[in-house]
Length: 450
Ligand code: GLU
Image (cartoon, rainbow, N blue to C red; front, side, top):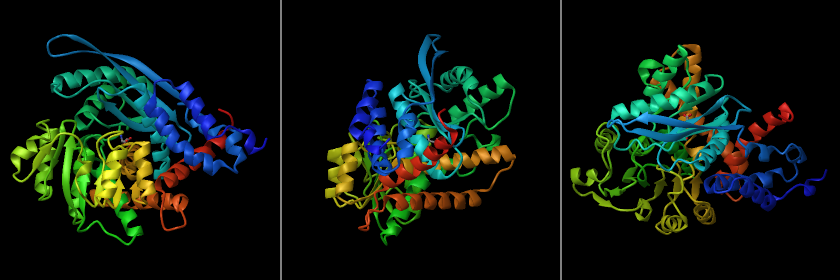
């Protein structure tokens, strides 16, 4: 059959929309990948015949379940939990768990789809998955979070395992939640095994895992800048978010001689023209993980800083790192960044820029590192945590730091291999999509029709 007999991009996307009604985030993520992959597959009849992209865009399975728990006032509460196991062609399903009121099946399907490409790009043997629940940890007591996590794991445990599916953290799921879930898994199964990553250092967690996503996003930015003969030193940066990814990105920018101007949360952002230095970053880490407070409190603590509602993208800076959540940077905000002289964007979050925003960056030939490449350092060190758990060893901070630096360099190289436009501009979206796709696709071809 000739390639021309197969569906084109528009027909393919029509089908995706029809099969996934009311799931805009998932359709958006597939669209972003499909436009590059269709171009890449133009002369590759085997991928068309085996319907590879269609198969990757159809999760292997979606598990959805009820999560009942009791709050501190003895009210019975009911949440919905999911695990989306998208693709395990190149390794066990791997990807985080998100607890947030905005979690839907569409959001988790998009994240699991993205994760498949991201994990492939790391070069480590990990498939793609994602899970979560529409549970809001904000304002809940530790005891409530514990009961929720235990109830969630009481269902999830039967679907995961160190060679099957290895969840980790994501928005709303950090060290505390991983601890409660790991404890429950161990209690139910009577097995100590590396079934979750992002664990505490005391019980099999990897050094460098907390820092990995944020540091990795800055290393990716550093690689993009180096490719253009530039350096982070002396440059200003706007960062969104104030969680694990944002604070570690801020830390690495600062260590490399850059100046961080903003951090944010769902209430708004703080702007500190003096720069958010290490002492202030440590204060934010404490605020967010121990006090569980709001970023607006920063402006009361540090003079010169101001709090504003909305998002930080209108603040003038050389670099931008969206490290909060999906679709947090739209077309107008992308235009504002470009017209304010922004030189580079590196995404610590997953799909933070809308499709229209990405187009603005590409049209302006801005250095733009999409999340699936730029934030892959987190899951990469998770992959290293899996190896350490299997081998019953632990590597030190320095060694893991070197491995993370090398992994991010390798991801950058893969992106340039497929994304170089020939005029000195690198389309990192295209590079990441094609490099991530190829490995998974070739593995799937080897398996036949399964
Ligand atoms: N949730 C993170 C991500 O989006 C980490 C996943 C993991 O470590 O498995 O990549």
